[in-house]
View 1 (cartoon, rainbow, N blue to C red):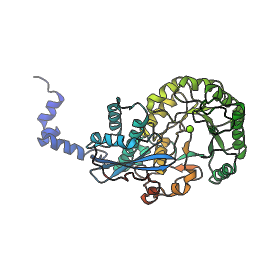
View 2 (tube, protein in one colour):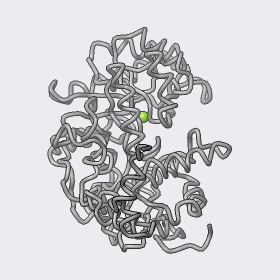
View 3 (tube, rainbow, N blue to C red):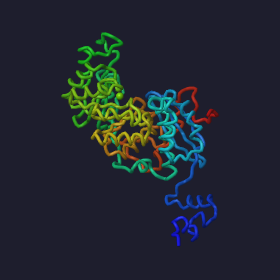
View 4 (cartoon, rainbow, N blue to C red):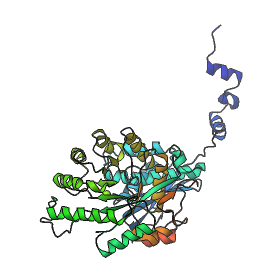
Length: 422
Ligand code: MG
């Protein structure tokens, strides 16, 4: 007698769901209802945006579903032009299951390969959507986002304050240093590049003169001695200068034992960044202008940076940030995400940072807009003495206070109003 295979046996014995109920759709419904983790079946129904201008421009994204819940995300820096891009994602997004975050992300990314999806505005627009999907997934499943990104390895996220000042040497700069101390941050960053330095001989060429370099070193020395030695100090050159300047500055500031020197040369030539790094003991950080894992691959392979700084509201979102961090981990490179956004994007970044073993420190850039920062979400101030406790609430764990947020709305732009455009 011929042996029955497994499917035939189940069918004949009446144990197969299809056999049991005699209907494929009923079988599927039963399977869905008995899903061990009660996975809700959601469909995306709409995607809407709102634009604010605080430190640069931010685009807030909301992804709506057929069951009344929505997710919120935020994109920044390269977000100029993100709104029409997000609108262009809509025909694909409508009807998708929002819990398949990586499928949606990868589908939109690969659909855009002839539209610039390798970097820049396309990826930034996608980042805002990706973050909204994680918030949505967390809310739908009743879990904080960090739980969906692998679980947390820490309960609070160390934050550094970007001092957001032209120079620490003037009165305003010194007031700012005092503010940073009063807020009990454990690390601070200052800019040392200066487009308007009177010692510049040429307004186009970026080879710093001896006096310009002296000015940069003077700023570093002043900030370093203004803080207790236990407070870390980082400095930024904003990827403006040439190789000779980058190397000279990195060498001259070695005695100050900085947390890092950021973008001493432009980021697009990885070999140049590596040459600066190899010339100095000052740790070199970069990455805020790189996109996706692909953008970080060469940087890591060539050992061009001591610390990487992906901007999660720009480089691909939370899971892409985790993937970038995991790549860096194999090179023993820590991750210090660049971050210039509202408490919504900041808290979203915190969930990724909570899940990443090689996380170092997260940027905070709203000290110049403290009142708005403290009212932007219903939860109020989220930073406690230089750390953000990671919330256990479902999703990102903060909700926009619309009345406060609208104070920074870009005039003439929609505020989550529905649009007809596909
Ligand atoms: Mg920077």
